Length: 549
Image 1: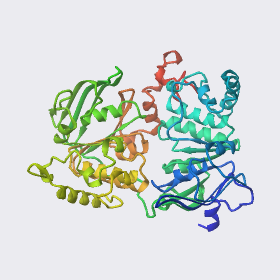
Image 2 (image 1 turned 90 degrees about the vertical axis):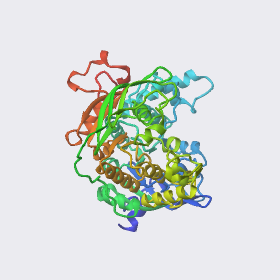
Image 3 (image 1 turned 135 degrees about the vertical axis):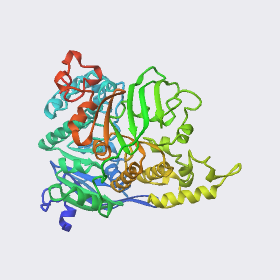
Image 4 (image 1 turned 180 degrees about the vertical axis):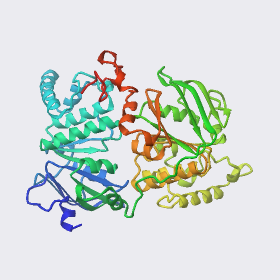
């Protein structure tokens, strides 16, 4: 790869001014060098991907471009002109818009009200709303961003909320759009529609910067891609001239196994049997609506679905800590014996004693105490084990020795058991939780979003450990919003929608399209109801007759 290609985003013709050019951008936070002499050229009218491991500096770099941070040194050029970006308003005036991974929308405001928020024409809202309605209609038609301007945000699907964020940026006359992990909460159909929108924006001359950890998306949608590693830009190439394997190696600095290697499952006796499980939360909302399934020894059951369809409540209930005030019914049997669902033995400690390990979906809230050290976190939940106690006192030396061994086996970096959990990257925090649960050799492992926010090297490692546990004859319940992860790891797949299991499939006998329909609540496309019979929750799902186009 030539130095010229590395500096020019994969193009040798650097005569025309780029949409964005960063020259020798550096940014440090105390002793941590987040960005070091970054050079990046983003050509006009292209989709430019930026990838890298956790902590590579991608978010810091985009935050500098959008005015959230000021660089310590370096220069920013927009459309060939040097620009000092002091805040986000400066970026917006320069034609730069950003769609964040977690949307910045007021849930009880309408689409129209969110669009004009912060850019009202005066004290009277009526003229601003009238103007915005006309512009919004034009933008929606031009870019296939159809959304009801009078609907409140909380009534929209996640995919339509994302459209509102894009419309906000376009209303502010953005010619350059930064999208941060835009498909993380979308169904496959919504993600496909987003890509069509981005292609339409590119065709109209807009420039897109796409931050994603999904190499498949990079290969599918981008023109050029830049790779960051440890705060530095290590390569910029044309997407057509690279491969997922090369990009993964550039990100990590070594060859990475992208596909999960595993032999066919050899299922044994049923470990977990769930029958007609129902859960109503403290607000009276039914979160689980008669869930039934089995998991056998030596197999991985993957639960697919868009976040918020009951998967969290299922994991928490199985793990022994449902939300306070919830009403639960149904039955759960573990190794043939009933588990207490509502009594004094329905807690997480009892679940662990029965052979259930749990890697929760949110490692920072439910899996770790961030201010405690790594060695303390490795013992949490199991600190009453005989090997960690001497009479009435805890044996801290034994706990520390055990933690250090786990940290070494699971390649936690830095390998320092005395560091507080918050001082580790997201991927290494996840390794601490995974090490704690897998090393206790549970009969059943509950694992939620195992690689959320985790870089590609740690993903490879965690996947291997999950498969090893299965091959040791254990049962695994895997919950993930990543369909690629579900398809590659699972031996069977169940799809959840609105608190129900919509269907079960074998990975080799299904497609992402079929799973996507199940994730949207559609079980039989030939008998889908017409618009009069479409439930409210499906009104904004792509591909549903009667829903929005």
